[in-house]
Length: 111
Image 1 (cartoon, rainbow, N blue to C red):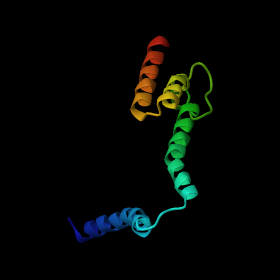
Image 2: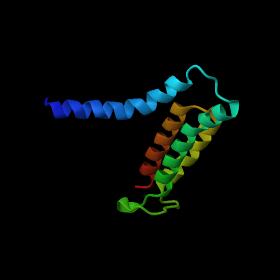
Image 3: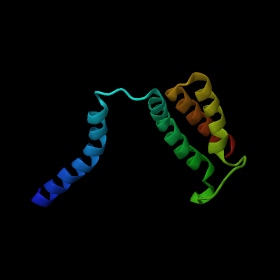
Image 4: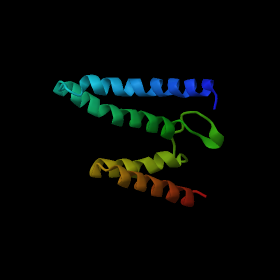
């Protein structure tokens, strides 16, 4: 491994580590305002929902990237029972299992 490789690895480490560690170090001894803490609690589900919705609704046959809302969209059909399961149980793994089972069942039935 050359010196360039080591510098590259060290640079990547700093670029990834500093943005994660700096807020942790600065905020670890302070308590956040309750409204800010509540807002920060909502960021991960919002990001996950944005990623999922774009993948569920913007797909199509043969890899086309377009709005695809209809009964042929098995991911949209599978999202309904998964959403209901997630809403009722507030659990991650059960929701994923129901979604995977729904996609498998939709693929089986729509062949």
